[in-house]
Length: 234
Image (cartoon, rainbow, N blue to C red; front, side, top):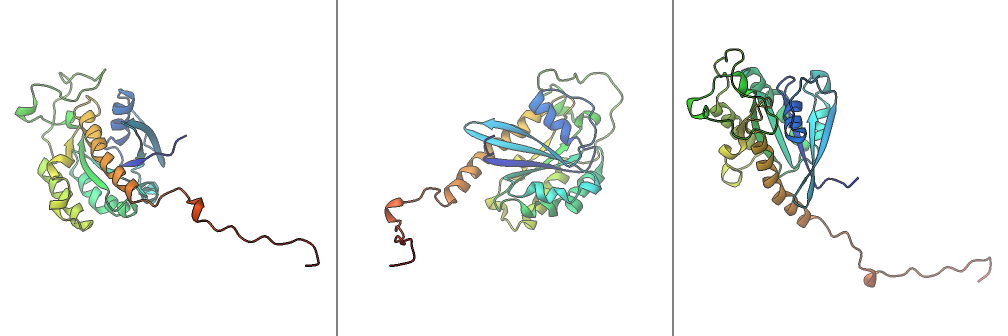
């Protein structure tokens, strides 16, 4: 199998929907899933590049593996549940440190999943933008609860990440481009999330390739070692 040109890693607490987001985008389906054990990945071709997307376990006992999966990552998707504020706090407290092994120019997306469980802002109600084929409809079902984590909370976390990575806000993508709210169940903004990130990752991959040392050897400047004579006598 061809070595991926770039790597995207999903991090976040258990039950925030990381696996469901990946299945919605890659398999165009939503199903009840068991918690991820260790990690799993998909390979996505985007333009002329192959990008691996890694799903990681949110359980405490697998926490140490996250640093290994993040090694050399081109982008990290930090995922939380919009109906559980603690899941956003966990991103900073438990998961941000795992990204120390990512590439120095790693991109960060902050994703609030499960917007189908909370009341939609009035401006969002007329449609389900970003729905994939076979997505569940938004009508009916149990009453929705007020949204617990607001978009401005995600923006604040993104700015904290830039400080943690010692990046100037002027040199980094704007928070409004890197903070998303999604529903793996309905497909809301799932395509937008991944395809926006793919488009942003491609220039990073190109830049990293340009900085790599050449892989060819100039044989014209290679000195042939002198021959040694075999035998016991000169």
